[in-house]
Length: 221
Ligand SMILES: C[S@@+](CC[C@H](N)C(=O)[O-])C[C@H]1O[C@@H](n2cnc3c(N)ncnc32)[C@H](O)[C@@H]1O
Image (cartoon, rainbow, N blue to C red):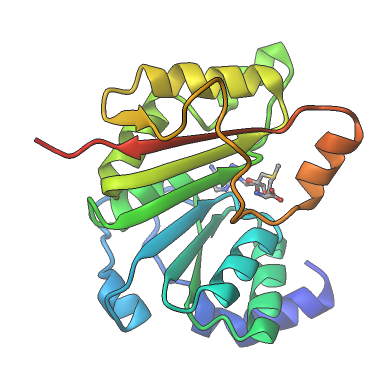
């Protein structure tokens, strides 16, 4: 991290970053480490969670424009979290919290079941080389932990600029019995709650189509 980011971490982390018990790995979450969202945010409000929030552009914008909603950014990249806190502080986004952790473990072990209203995954690492595609985040196992964390009727929003990952996401979600599409046709319309980030801009600049998808969690029986 840069010196400014180190300073931001020291000053702002106590206010923004949720301190979590770790398992073996540095970005892991110890099983059974559930938080109480009402205690963390100090109120009962809808909760939107962004996975892989990067520099935090999308979530800081969303949190500062929707003060009635609580937001959680999940990232493994500490410098990105420092940048996010600096921007959140400038924007006065007191409804935003951050967690430095591997996202599937946050969904499985940190957030209570059926506690999330929306889950956002925008431009996840594409791992586009054939030998690396198995590292991609959006898989059947991911759909299962997303279904656990989302409330009935909650929405999972996905976006990518890698066509074969977009197709993989759609195939995974079509096979995930807990979800139904929240769009008609081939792809969802661009989610207008998403600000343009460097990743989206770069994909568009090199001529890649940006694909959005949205799936609603079916009611638990
Ligand atoms: C390509 S970047 C996109 C960042 C941001 N969503 C945007 O559109 O600008 C993907 C981000 O996901 C984060 N990431 C990758 N795997 C993760 C995981 N398992 N848990 C949490 N964050 C992860 C990376 O550190 C990186 O910042």
